[in-house]
Image (cartoon, rainbow, N blue to C red; front, side, top):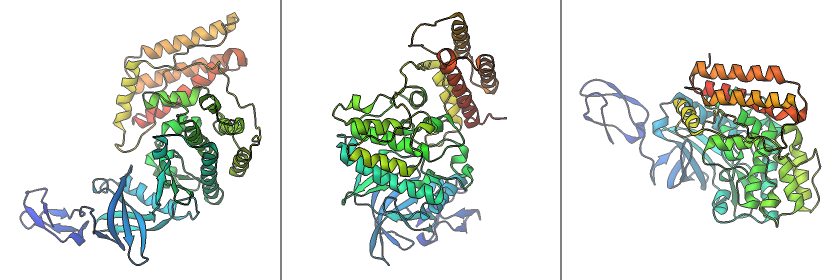
Length: 447
């Protein structure tokens, strides 16, 4: 193979098998790294012979390959060469290997081998001859019982990961679930998972990663103490999509989706798909409760509730399921969205959606009119802060700190007001502070 010297530009000859090693340019004596060979059909990587490309993921390519010694097909995940010079990406790839290698369960993709060969970082996992749920959802929704059976299998895999290793997935969605030809669901991409026993800074240096349409409210807010219930929510959102053919919350951009996930009431799935059973609808609503305490309190309870829904029985009621429809809506100004997106892009990683989001909360109270002078004062104060946010000339460090201070003063003054007059205002202000801090951190502005 030949490659160009980065210093003098001459063609340098090297052996393909030496990819990743170093040599000296024969012309200018510059130390060069031999590039990894282009992955192609027939290339040997470790104990595997590459066959054909299966797809492209967030961190690299996935190839069908044959493990010659075992005479079996595997999915070979390969970190693209352009990322191997980035220590963060390499660390994340190694972390994915270590995390996934712990898990041996029929509903979780199994890791067979991993390593570096010819400068190529690779991981061999189970090859699933089947269909990704997202592909089916592009054409139609799933029959109720089939969807429940698939979700039950995924829940059993997640229960195993949590109960044995305290591992969260954190990116459950139809794109990460496959069903093989025997009908067994397989959960993929444990790469952004989080173990409570490990340093979470390994995962994208503290940034939120995941898919906003399926993300739990507490995870979207950037709460630190998340647990298995955030995965229950995401699995519920996936089930919602499967049985209705629609996303539970959708908007034109990720920021608006996050706002809806945090603040908007869930439209019951049996109102979207009127043929859906009441039992399945209530199951989903419990799984997707805004408050984690209102969801199933263990994976075992969730699996029991899924079995109940399959049998046509109502799930265990933790609380009143229906969300109040009198919660304030959240809207965004176009100018403010542009300002915020500019800051987010400073720390964006090109292949990962970083959900550091700030909600500009312009409240549109859609419930009953303000009943008394106290509530009128609270409403006016809230709107005043919202208007100051809208008028903020820039979203720099000083501006963000100033807005955080204004929302905190609002909370300090009105905290403790009755539920009917202040609960939604205080809660929204608290959400705004949390998201502002996340924005500041993602933009590299945190003191």
